[in-house]
Image 1 (cartoon, rainbow, N blue to C red):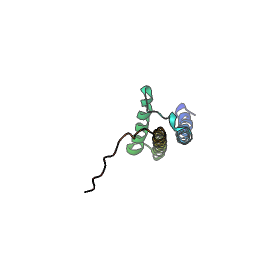
Image 2 (image 1 turned 45 degrees about the vertical axis):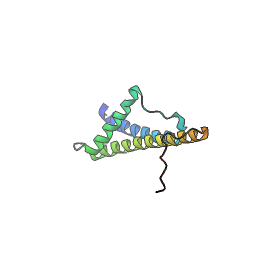
Image 3 (image 1 turned 90 degrees about the horizontal axis):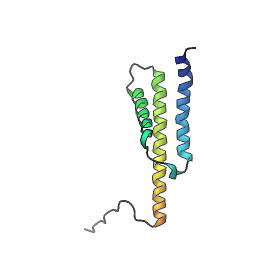
Image 4 (image 1 turned 120 degrees about the vertical axis):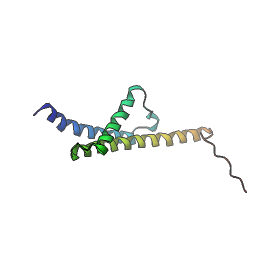
Length: 112
């Protein structure tokens, strides 16, 4: 077995399992631990964009490769959306418990 075959057979499942673990962590970790990417963490956003782009526009790729890259990109996107949504809800609950005003005050409606 060549090195490329070993990477293909072991790497693909590890990447997909890693993305599935990211979704699980997004649902199970406390919302206060979520943070936006800083510094070198932006490389993960680039990696996500590359896998999503290869899945969507990789015409010279095999259907299997496009499928696992699309699955990985989808799982990572779901993990980030769930974590951000939970963090947003948590921040709103903390603000309401403190009695602080909401971030954006809505203007009152006129009675006319």
